[in-house]
Image (cartoon, rainbow, N blue to C red; front, side, top):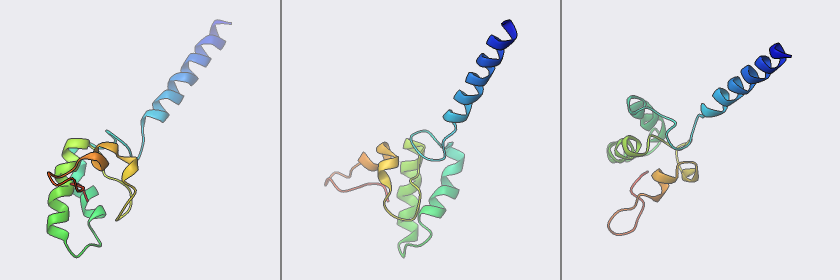
Amino acid sequence: MAKFVALILLALLAISMVQTTKPYGPGSLKSSQCPSQCSRRCGQTQYHKPCMFFCQKCCTKCLCVPPGYYGNKAVCPCYNNWKTKEGGPKCP
């Protein structure tokens, strides 16, 4: 019986560890990963330099960069909700 309980606890621990590693979402990145993720995000824009500047600023604050080249900001609420003084989106 003790072996069964230990096995169940080990399985629950493994499942919880798998669920905490997420490819996108708040806190899914380390700040050292921001340049590569922003290069991916800004890779197809004609405004590469400003895109990279603001993306890295947002990534450093939010530790998240949405998937794809455009849109999908709902995956990263901090990234999505950070606005300029005029009320426009701050993060690309």
